[in-house]
Length: 302
Image (cartoon, rainbow, N blue to C red; front, side):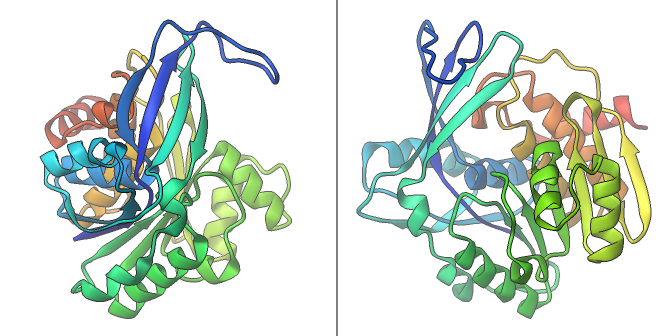
């Protein structure tokens, strides 16, 4: 079982000719409304990659809540531990340019009050994985991580949005997933300024004893685990937008670990899922399924 403690949002997405600079207005032709949020995206990604998934989080009692939960429910994610609160459901406002790059502003809403207390109601064990991000309160992430570690399971943190995770939370982790920007932010907080992604991952692995993965966008991924380096190039795909690519990587990577794949096999499946997510617009609508992931793994890595 994979337990995801994280955010649920509604995404309002508009396509623009270019991303705006500070103080600038750029017009888009319209917008689409999709379910999103890093926690929800990663839960859906793990489920579509074949895992049994429980999502712990919070939504409001508004009309956006049903949109935020719709695809998760349809794909069979266990939503019985998602709280309904008297605050607005979280929302993200996303602009995507013609090259597929994006800018995102997130309003936390109910996510700011998400509680990890529901983990005490779950039958956690050694075969389980907890997947965390940073769109819910860090003190609650720490509670969740300690609960999973006490049960003997593994804990993965996707350090997104970028920030300096507390030493207490880092001490509870088995694996850390970051992109290049998130690696720079954490590196500076650790007193390691301007490290290249490969060297950052190596130092996290060797000096903190924490397996580390840095996603490199179109350049693939590098990971260090137990002193061993893995480097994979990204499959060649036609990019539409990059929304949910990182979340698809995280969910599929965790699902592969839960299915018994080793670090390298899980990296392959995470990278395939993240690449496939770039070929379809939107967040959750772009999250690929296991059959497509395995097909791309077979074509790109085997």
